[in-house]
Length: 116
Image 1 (cartoon, one colour):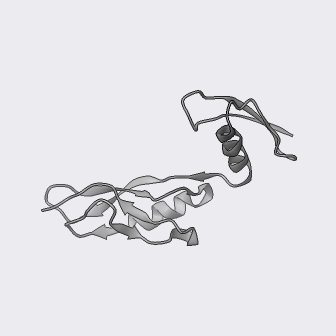
Image 2: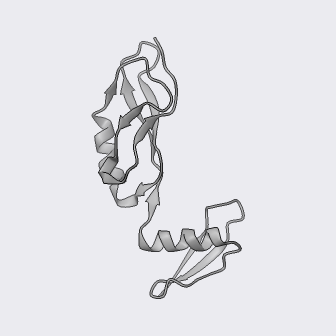
């Protein structure tokens, strides 16, 4: 079976064709496209960006993100976990909000500095 997709690794946007049985990839202009297609077929992952509550008079929420990609199927579970987070100021870029989410080795970290 063939699957078609557009590579999002770089701005070129190669039109990829992947044989889902053999994992043969065509249409890529560089090795990164081939790697992207194989991961997307076998175990799709995403970096997640969101916000969490913070007890500040200046701002009600602060931005966070995963340190790297996590399994795509876990995104909604992560969003549920983030909904229960309530940080106390001050927060700094890189502060760990959730550690080793879903045993992936990836953390959720703060992406902005906020002081009272």
